[in-house]
Structure formats: C-alpha cells, structure tokens
Image 1 (cartoon, rainbow, N blue to C red):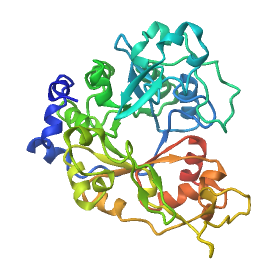
Image 2 (cartoon, rainbow, N blue to C red; image 1 turned 90 degrees about the vertical axis):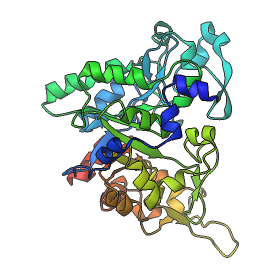
Image 3 (cartoon, rainbow, N blue to C red; image 1 turned 30 degrees about the vertical axis):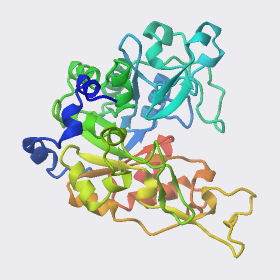
Length: 388
C-alpha cells in the first residue's frame, strides 16, 4: 500500500499522527452514562434470519434492540450496501448463479489472498438480483434465498420509520469493513458514509448513530469530519487453553498498523495507555468479549482438555471462567464507553459456568459495567437486561 493511495483515501493524516489537540480534548471528555446497556442487533436478529437483511433488522427492532448493525461494503457503482464482508460467497447465493461465475476472482484483503465474489465487482442492479442466505451452518436455513441485500440508505430509512412507528429511538451502528481494501480498489467508504449520515440529519454526538471500525486511521479521519460517536473495535484470533488472547494475522492488529509498520497489536490497544490513546479520537472501545472475561480449559493428567459435559466434543462448554480483566475499569478511567461482542444463544458457545443459559452470560457481562453489547439474539439480550 503506497502513501499516495492512502492519501487518496483521505487517511494519510490519521495514519501519520494522532488527532489534533482540539479534537483530542473533545473526544476525551467523559462519555454520558446510559441508564441501561444498549442492545445492538448484530447484523440484525441474525440468529433467526439471514444476516444483514431488512427482515433481520426489522425483527431485531421488534425484539427491542436499541441499535441495528449494518456492516458496510461498496458496490462497483459506489453504493454502500450491508454485507459482513466484501466477499459475497458466504452470505448470498452468488455461487449458484451461472451468470456471475466469471466474476469469481482473487484479491488481497488485509494481506490475505482471498478467492471469492467481491461486492466491488458488481453494480447495485446486479446485487439486487442476489438473495441472502444464513451464514452459520448450524442455524435455520429455511429463509435462504428469500431476501434481498439492502443498501445503507434502506437501513437508515427502516430505522427512521420504525422509530416513528414505535415512538422510541432505533439507532444505526455501521461498521466500515476493510477501509484500506476499499480505498485500494477506488471505493473508499468514509465520505460515502458521511454523506449518507448528513442527508439523514445525523451529524451530532446525540444522533442515533455510532460508527465502528477495526482500523484506527479511518476513525481518526472521521473524527475530523463528524461529531457522531465513534467506537474502536478490538479483535483477536482465538483464546488459548489458559484463557489467554491469541493473536495471528490478519486478526492481530489494525490493518493500518500493518501498512505503516506499527509494531503494536490489538492487545496494546486495551492496555491503560492504549485506551487513553483511543480516547483521543473515539468515544468508546468495543473489544471481543474474552478481553473482558475469558474462560480456560481444564487440563487433565494426560495433558489434554477435559470434556466437562461428557458430550465427546471440546468447545466453550468445557471452559471455566477466569476473573474479569481490568479493561472495563481502565476504559472508564480514560473516559471511554465499553461495548462488547458477540453474544449468542447456542449452548456450545457458552462457558460451563453459564450452564447453557445465555441470560446468565448477559448478566455476568452487564455486571462488569459495560455500556452495550452486540447480540445475534436481541430478544434474549433485552430480556436479560430488563429482568424479564
């Protein structure tokens, strides 16, 4: 990635230096404390319906979600659409569409050679012919092939319409997906996103919108352009047997760090010093939940993890919780709000302490003092938060 390319994306200043002092002072002001943690419908109510569809977002709103989350990628003609990745193969029926067979190609995404169908090679009109499918093999596939891929504008329109109908605020929590990748193919996301938010009348910190990113440079760029709330996402590759965070590319650091040769990792972002730096350009931090409270395996005398529930499979159900980290405390001390992700109902995705009850996991994380979380099952999250 060249410096010229980064400059064309409007990211060079953010990559090179921290936010200006005036921005730092404003961003570092203590964030307002919500009375209740926010529940974000992760890709909509994606535990029930194919993710990033209007139907999944509408269901999340009906289940009480405070925000709906569209991940944003761009089409060939520059329209923002809601997909988890610019790669379409995992969440649409494109692989079964012979008219698009020749579009399958290999591109480098965050340093990884990836072969798939990419949104940037399709016009919006072509995207409209595709249909969404369930991304998880262990979830209900009966709605596959029924729903279109929405534009970001349609997601905004839905949130506004449902807010008016229900008499409560329904916010939108967009994520800029792979900003450097999109800049490299001539489809930078940031100004397109800001234009859509401006048209919606959402330009202030009080607006019902939060922008999130795993990269840091584009958040710094956005900070100089808007006052809407910004959250720094923090990723990792896995958790080891002892509950320690495992870092491996491309999930080891923000990709702008790779481009600029910055040796820091995601772990560095959630140290006390790293959180203070985040507070110079963002309103909050959103770490993967093991950064806040992880689980360890129980290792037997044979050196192998024990199958605690005797089901013949080693998974999350065979981990026991460790004490919470100090990330929430340090983030609050830096003036940041804390959101976390991703919460799911399936028993195999819950530590043994929760005994298969997702409500128990929500309550444990609420007790840490987090300000919000992302859930594939917003109804369960809302019920746990509200004591229902």
